[in-house]
Image 1 (cartoon, rainbow, N blue to C red):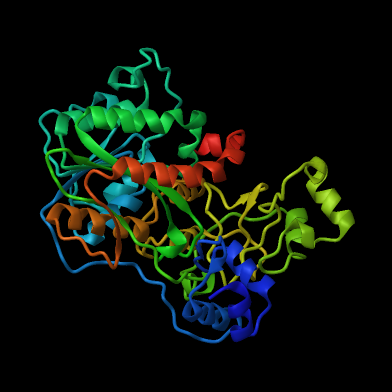
Image 2 (cartoon, rainbow, N blue to C red; image 1 turned 90 degrees about the vertical axis):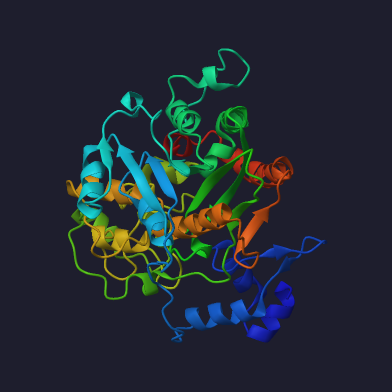
Length: 433
């Protein structure tokens, strides 16, 4: 369906459908003439949802009944988002490690029988460890390129070096790295090129892709760059989760959410946000209040759409950050004039209600905001098990055939690179990596 065809059948304007596309409520494909193409079934579902018609609640914590014997070493494990998703997919953990004491205690509280190590990763000896998978969401500093060969020696002193050292010593069948999509253009693409080069030098075939969590059973517009590396002696394809044709709304995610503590607004900010409608932001204020609230930011370029932002019931949440009430990335409840609570944060990230977060309120927000959503990790873990079984499902996975990784990466990076160049000077993106 083209935009015009669909608008006539559904009974909404073409601009409305384009707005749904821009908001990420519906997946779009492009024709050979670069026209938007849509699924009519999905358009009808979105129309019903936004019209307030009950169509069921798709929100759930994904968990498979199958169990595998494949073992994972997970570095930089944080509050356990990836670990929980992998565990729910059927993977076992040989080791979880993180340097943050609150995150480590969170892991210990929820995984009491797991091997969990708190401390400096540089002091861990991996040489005697065995695992099928090594995974890590390593921070990515720009590399020095001291030897200008973009090899193992050039990455010393970075956290990726520790990840690569673990891969070198353990020699897992599969290595997985994850990061924000800004890594594609970090240091003009040199950082990612170095990562790929190092993994290849260690004897791995590498493919990467940006996954959009909102199409993988997460009620949140969150994008993560996933890097998968398969040991060269294993002639198995690389597989990424195939996006679904639906999204999950905030209304579905927060249904019957347990009450919990959360940040509070000062009186002035609460007064301002009380004037913002669901899905609205600072431009919905009277002009005099826009200038008063925005101050110097009012006169700067850019949409600044995260400021004075109230979330919408009928859409996935915007990306959760480490705090729900930052001025540039406001996350106000759709109905009540307050920031999202800790438990609401956890629901949106697809942590179960009984997941115990340790530490102060700000520490808990930070752990949740930094986590990979467990449902996203579940889908990745499911792909990893299928890769190790060499039993891939083309209906639920995007498969990169053996030997086509470089071509796949060039297609992915070419599309994403152009879209991301505008962020290269954005300090928020650089600081998030």
